[in-house]
Amino acid sequence: MKLAVLGCGKMTGAMLRRWLDTASLPADSVRAVTRSRSSADRVAAEFGVQASTDACEAIRWADLVLLGIKPQQVGDVLPGWADHVPPGQVWLSVLAGTTTARLQALLGPHAAVVRLMPNTPVRLGLGATAVVWPTALAAASRAQIQELLRVLGEVIALREDRIDAFTAIAGSGPAYVFLFIEALSAAAEALGFSASEAQQMAVGVVRGASQMATEDPRSAAALRAEVTSPGGMTQAAIAEFEARGWPAVVADATQAAVARARELAS
Ligand SMILES: NC(=O)c1ccc[n+]([C@@H]2O[C@H](COP(=O)([O-])OP(=O)(O)OC[C@H]3O[C@@H](n4cnc5c(N)ncnc54)[C@H](OP(=O)(O)O)[C@@H]3O)[C@@H](O)[C@H]2O)c1
Image (tube, rainbow, N blue to C red; front, side, top):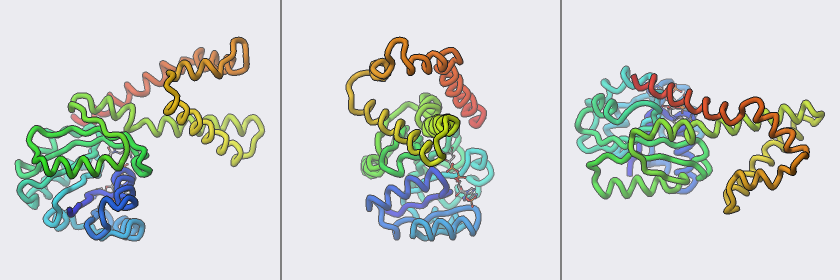
């Protein structure tokens, strides 16, 4: 299978890293395309794949295309690429807020569009990727794509009207956890720990707690209760989180992400 990665940045780069690390794709079956020559040189050095700024040539060469440019750019660039799409070529899109119908209209009837919503932990095979399957897709193409997605981590098939909500939780979610790690680390420094001690503690806490939440059949609330003795230190901290509206802040943040997806789609 020949894969063209059109836009090889943080997200599609994480997917490509995993596919190369697991030998799901050999490096010589991938061509990456970026906007600038300097990014293409960086991608070629980092991944050991052929990289250029010539999207049209890569589209004509590929069996499968992975689209990873910014949603704001599709209207400008896709019309110029559409003429080069061979009949039946499958396009995987990771673009937030850009619907299958919009991509299909820009690419024309030749392309089959599969919408994906991955997150950056796919790099380690620990991602969560939503997939919106088109109604008509050859069984062989579907099996091939399923195999590529499987090595990225969890795969969840969704209806397209659920994808913005999924993105607000799982696509953007790693950033929320990194924000919490930053805050916990800064709090540790404020309590007198060195920057490296603070970072080690914050990351260790998140890793340990998420591993427990993965392996222990009890709910997160039950696991929290185990750490929260009545009248103890943890309860004092949780009371402060709740007084500041922590659960509501998380809900509002995810709503803001969904609202932004709607703006990007319009
Ligand atoms: N980051 C995430 O966690 C995440 C999660 C889920 C979905 N997504 C989606 O992934 C997409 C990319 O996001 P990102 O964070 O990976 O962005 P990014 O790191 O900025 O990567 C964008 C890539 O697109 C290339 N590009 C831009 N215009 C191009 C053009 N005209 N022709 C060819 N290549 C072009 C850029 O090349 P240059 O470097 O030369 O500009 C770069 O390689 C977005 O649509 C986003 O919604 C991201």
